[in-house]
Image: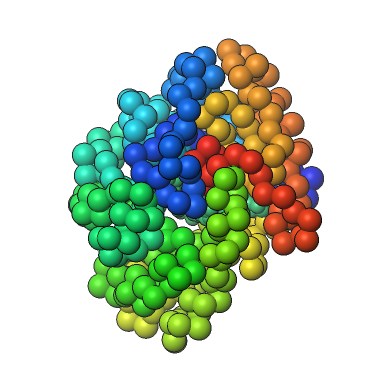
Length: 319
Ligand SMILES: Nc1nc2c(ncn2[C@@H]2O[C@H](COP(=O)(O)OP(=O)(O)OP(=O)(O)O)[C@@H](O)[C@H]2O)c(=O)[nH]1
Ligand SMILES: C[S@@+](CC[C@H](N)C(=O)[O-])C[C@H]1O[C@@H](n2cnc3c(N)ncnc32)[C@H](O)[C@@H]1O
Ligand code: SF4
Ligand code: SF4
């Protein structure tokens, strides 16, 4: 369905939990999330009802995200049911990779096409620092398992953090030389409790272009926010996701569903509609989806002088 600005909205990002087994400094508070009472969070069956309604409205790309989607019990059931829906062309997951070695085969069998895996550094200690305790070895095992089980193309998501990982741009980019993986540098967005920290550490992705010489521009993938390049002779690609310096709102094609049942027209807006009231009535869910699409703003306002970052943390929305 087209929105007010003529954009075709066909991509639903589904956050299946706000919990996580890591605590990335830019994403969620150290103490984690307060345990929501069960009725606040959607069951997998309820999430499926919303995905099914969206598929009937022409949504053809579904992303399962979180928090960490692999901490949600029985997540492969949702993947399987979604993959069986007519019209769904792409079903992907964004994960921190910690549990991926364990889940890759099950997810592939359930019908997941591919995974995007977050990895901000290649250094064991720096990884522990930014994730507040994570073990990078498990992520590397997860990436290998995803490759072995064909959850491809594999995209590595690296949030660029000034003074933390900008010294690793070349090393991360070189992963694409010998492996068919896609490394994407993402500009740090000011959001939730870490908004001020993120503003301080922000560096534009222009830095990547300055540091990696001879990058060859490629055609961008349909429906993805990344601008795509290749190092000469590389097997994989480099992507730049520039939500701040060169936002891609004019091609925005997505809605977000939060784990507590809110549909969001835009990542950077506090506006949301409670979809729980439509559960059990597919036509009502479709009406709520239409209302959310009609609320989509033309663009975010992060660069406005008086912009106030939204209050939800990223783990609450799914990225
Ligand atoms: N501002 C903004 N950032 C987004 C949007 N969609 C994704 N991102 C950010 O882009 C980064 C990568 O997101 P992913 O979850 O891997 O999803 P994706 O980039 O749509 O995935 P592909 O379909 O594989 O290109 C994360 O930091 C997201 O927060 C969006 O609509 N607006
Ligand atoms: C919120 S996480 C959820 C999925 C999973 N736990 C993971 O980390 O991949 C989704 C994506 O959002 C990115 N992200 C989180 N906070 C961000 C921020 N402040 N700015 C830019 N990207 C962010 C993460 O790096 C990750 O790639
Ligand atoms: S970015 Fe992903 S892995 Fe890191 S804290 Fe947020 S939800 Fe967890
Ligand atoms: S900031 Fe909002 S309008 Fe812009 S691309 Fe992201 S979700 Fe779409």
